Length: 452
Ligand SMILES: *[C@@H]1O[C@H](CO)[C@@H](O)[C@H](O)[C@H]1NC(C)=O
Ligand SMILES: *[C@@H]1O[C@H](CO)[C@@H](O)[C@H](O)[C@H]1NC(C)=O
Ligand SMILES: *[C@@H]1O[C@H](CO)[C@@H](O)[C@H](O)[C@H]1NC(C)=O
Ligand SMILES: *[C@@H]1O[C@H](CO)[C@@H](O)[C@H](O)[C@H]1NC(C)=O
Ligand SMILES: *[C@@H]1O[C@H](CO)[C@@H](O)[C@H](O)[C@H]1NC(C)=O
Ligand SMILES: *[C@@H]1O[C@H](CO)[C@@H](O)[C@H](O)[C@H]1NC(C)=O
Image (cartoon, rainbow, N blue to C red; front, side, top):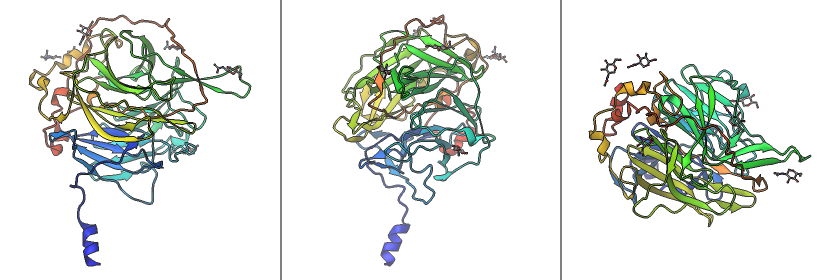
């Protein structure tokens, strides 16, 4: 009895684990750590798992040093959710989790906001004014800016789809709902990425429209061409339709999109075919943010298996997470066509375009280059000209949205090819602070790093 009690009191945090195979979890970076929260485990059951990965040491993809820091508790909201939205706040220590499904049949959707403090590994739920309009939703996107705001967009509830913004000001813990003209159609399973000048780029997914000729009010979910890029500028509260060219990726949902290390491009990996239950992708595309041209780099070594969608009754499940650390894009978790979830981790080196098995903390050739001038941020570029709002885009690591789609929805291609092309070929601003992002710093030096 005494031995048993002693065992319970032993610290367990240092023991490395093989994570459970999970999909629909939220993976974000905070400081020199990656956290993957919640999701769905085989069963299926909604998971309360929190996995932690140290990115301040080097390791092999065959044995990433995951630790399990899951917390049991009676207050489960925020602890158990799947397909939620998550983003690290501008303090780099707190992870905000909003919404998500709290039952696997997707009939119970949360509108709660919980904060995981990575310094204490504890959850809290901030009391916030203005939450009464906060919709319950999943398949939405969260982006934190450098002013303490988290921008929530898109997603769906049981039978509702959203195209409105909710903005959580985490400095005052208030929620506001900017009323923005020219809003695009409601969208799910897209990506949202913070890009230079604090703008937000949205790609892919499915748009929702109501079938006006259907007396029962049926839904139509339309795949979105990857040529149709949405840009939102929080500083002007304006949407812009961009049209990309080049080697345009196939339409996809629940792909991942990360801003490149030099902030010049968006790197997209994988995703599921919006038109098919069983077709998934493990391809890589790069969107040059200056020219708005897509290209497909030729990549050495074997890519990870496609994170395939899976049909189970009338649901499809797919998830993958991707986070960029310097030039290394970490791809993890997901679901395959045989009904098995992944617990693996893969690394794409975006400087050599190689699928790599080593995570290296110090192999970044760019780290020896002189830091780019912060004055560059005043240069005009294709994303919409001059702005004083300097991005902290390094924290905008994008975790792929997660999805579940109603199979009975009718898909229809909508190329919408007539959209406006913005003037191109101007220089996009460099992200001035990225070179300060040096993961060999001790975490406790971080708050003095001066990211803002
Ligand atoms: C959730 O939504 C309900 C209305 O459906 C609202 O009364 C409540 O305040 C919201 N709660 C949160 C935490 O947003
Ligand atoms: C973008 O295009 C859509 C149609 O595809 C339109 O409804 C919307 O108003 C456009 N938005 C802007 C800001 O031009
Ligand atoms: C809309 O609903 C009508 C009536 O049910 C149906 O015939 C039609 O195929 C639907 N259109 C689409 C695009 O789903
Ligand atoms: C950036 O601009 C400031 C003045 O605004 C100037 O003092 C500084 O030298 C410039 N830096 C570079 C690298 O050009
Ligand atoms: C950049 O733009 C901001 C705001 O317009 C201005 O305050 C700043 O002086 C500019 N910096 C340079 C180097 O031009
Ligand atoms: C992106 O486009 C710009 C403008 O066309 C070009 O100068 C730059 O070389 C391109 N970047 C890459 C990596 O191809």
